[in-house]
Length: 176
Image (cartoon, rainbow, N blue to C red; front, top):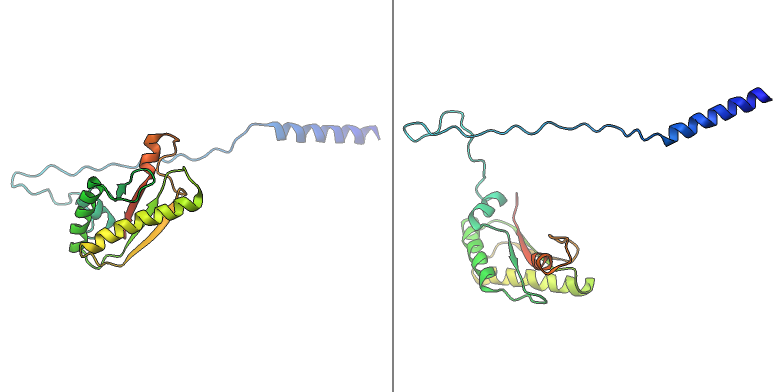
């Protein structure tokens, strides 16, 4: 009986020590991605054979961002009115959409964290609709979908005016 109590006590102690260990499984760290630079142009102005080429596909979202500069417009507090800065961005979007008229697009409406979920969903939809309507009035008749995320997908996580201003936006989503 004493021998079995000793065995049980030793086993319990071993289990307790194992449970208390702070051994964390090691995570494999990946080496940094290799960087490649395009070779310098040759004397005739052409890049060497095998040069890394610009991989932006015409009509892609990367092309959209390169030509337009941004995929979002911002709004004032509790507003869905487009200001002059937003209209200037949308005018650049219109020029891009006229080059690629078959592009499908989704306009996402977003809000800051203030207000109820229902209020922000409605306001986000009005913001997305304002962008869609501006594009449509300019003759961009692409297949345009609108969706409102309200305050559910913030861009900035702070609870200050700078963060709130970043979150009051409409985002133009084009195919990759």
